[in-house]
Length: 566
Image (cartoon, rainbow, N blue to C red):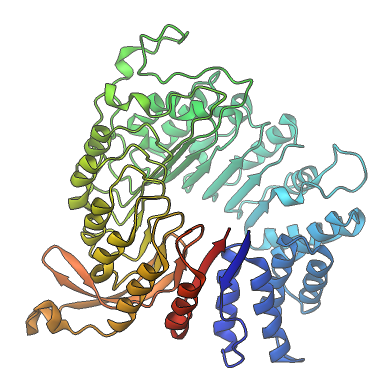
């Protein structure tokens, strides 16, 4: 497979600020070699004597992620020589030297980085630093060094702590830190991501009622959300939340038991302040027990009978919920019921305050359940139904009226939707910015019906679809020709034309665009937005000649076009 990537990197007239933005965009898309080219051009064009601290820092991180550790250390060291106070630069230098097995200097840079972390009231320990060790002793790693410095004395000004992938820290070390946490009353964020030593017993040593400013807790991959605890360890958090703190975000990823067994605890008044809820059921390990959801009460394999009073599952406990993310994955080796039984239980509709809804990989989510859930979601601006293979046209018809204000619509792998329904759905989204139709039944007929509704879209993903090069070319040309639509084309009078608003909209890919929208009735009609990203990966019917013509048409708009030839 060869890659045909269209990206304007050789334009020497491009301003340095614009090239820096392009480099950051490539970095966010994990296109590290392209990002390095941008940052290198900036440094060469600026010449000596210029303050290139930010560019050196960005290029050092990019070099590290591209596994060029010697270059990463060189850039990080150059930034340090410019008297940088960024802890990230020191940690990047430490991680690079650790990869090159120079553990002594690595720990020196690491300690300096932790000092700057303390000054910025933000401690972050990431998995890429696990391999940094003072000696060959595997028990003495980055986590132990960090805990040693953090536990020396209380740090009352510390606001955010993020423990990530600390597998080398013992439960006794965590207990010592948790005693210190009780003195850190200004904490707003406390994340324990994939720390197997954080058990229910260890977590119980934290007095959450003292942390009145706590807003975000991440218990992903910890032992607290295993079946044996049944979510009991979270009761202290909820009770403190009901009177003292105002928890706004809870994340419990990567354990299939989380979604099934935490519902009784989540479904209480303790979650009234929650605005963001993220629960993910990931792949079951081979040694894991077979999990059955609480509502399958009569299943003979389910050895724990859940009381009937835990049903039905409702959303009334989250009246202020704005962002909901649920992810369920089934594997071939292990049976996982996932969302299979949603149709067997009555579900109260999601709260009307919901603005962002993601139901990823809900392969068995039935139509009626999805329709009931979205009954009151008229304020949705973000909808992601990736992997919902059983979503049919009958259910989509009910979702279309609620999609009027959508700015991001992701239908990746919704293979049961017809091309006609895809067209009708997108045409109903009057404020659309990002559209993902990858791995759907979209074809040229879909594109033809979308031509007049794509004025505001700046990101279009058509990977693994049946579109052809000629169909995409006609769509692109129609969009470019309609660069400056006239308000009279929409039949607006003078009073309506004056009712325009300008704002910034951010899509799921991280693009920020200013736009002008005109209000008509209950929604908005978008004026022209240049296409910033077009993805046609694995579109077998897109010819190279047509792709070259698309490149010529979109070149003035600096559009990034991704295409992979098989």
